[in-house]
Every structure is written in structure tokens, then in C-alpha cells.
Length: 154
Image (cartoon, rainbow, N blue to C red):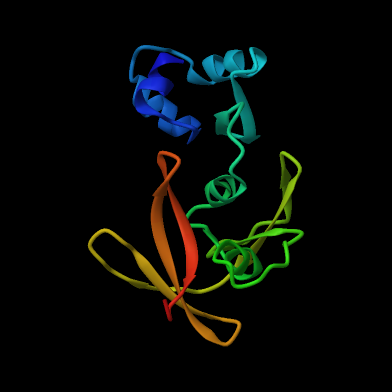
């Protein structure tokens, strides 16, 4: 637990925990299960965990798939481009995944083909959404990277 506090980790995978602990623990999954039983951690899905008090649905959604980004109606709401609150959190990804409910929040995964562009501190990907050019930005939020689709006109 002190290791998570020192590194300020709020959300992580079992693989991340294995890398951080190294050879200190033989069975990291038993350690994670013990922390879940003590209500210190919560399981997001198999092999992915967060602190029990962590509740940022955008960060959780981005960690449900590799290279996921908050997109479409959810991104429009996040950037104040609509006042309507989405019933689902839309996550854009390059993988197929079924609709998933985590901590009472429904996530819909939209598969799309993205063209990668490289940048220094921001990795951007270009796609067309709602008829306008949208950039996918990688931001450092809650001690983890969060991909958010942003309007390119800003």
C-alpha cells in the first residue's frame, strides 16, 4: 500500500504491479486480492485495479482498452460543446469490445482506424467525428495518461 502511495498510483494493471514490486512478492495477484478484501482496492476487470475511492470514469474507461480515448458525445460534453449529459461513456479504440458496466457507469467502445501522428509531449491521432476534424490528445491526469478527443479548432 505504501508503494502505491509513494508512486501516487490510482489505477493500474496487475502487470504494472508486478513490475513495481519486482521480486518482493512471489504472487502479486494474491496481494491484490488481499487488498480488495480489505476494501483498499477495487477490481475494474480481470487484471485491472484502482483505489477504492477512485471514481474518474474517463480515466477508468481509457484503461479498459489499450490506446482508448474518451470520444464522441462524451468528449463533446467534457469540452462544454453540449450541455446534454451522455447516458454512456464513449471510448474510441482500435479494438473490438462489448459494452461494459464498471461501478455503475456504462462504457461503449467504438472501433475506428486512426492514423498516428507523432509529437513531442502530445501524441495526436486524427479522425473525423460529427463532420469536423478532431484530435486525440494524451494528457497526464490522476497520475496516469488519459486520452481525450478534442476539437481541432481550439
